[in-house]
Length: 75
Image 1: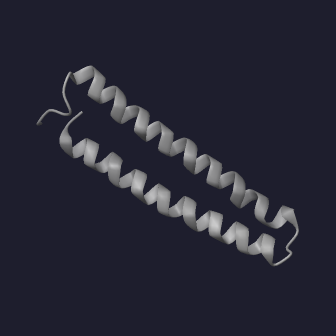
Image 2: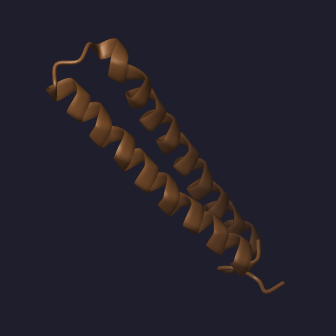
Image 3: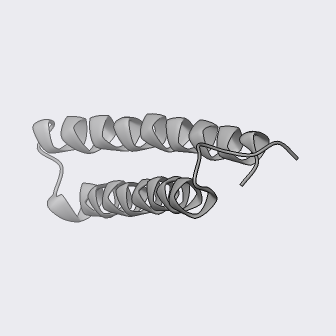
């Protein structure tokens, strides 16, 4: 994996974290407003999917580090 590829993955993880936080905030606000669970449950589930995607990114970065014997190589 090149440094540029790793940078894209890290940026993607950051964007996913922001999205997950927004989804969680909205779901909590709906719950606190007394909305039925059916209205915010899809947001809760999406937050879990965001977490799974982030784990995939971290796994890819870890695997690239392990396979390369060093942090990253130049392209």
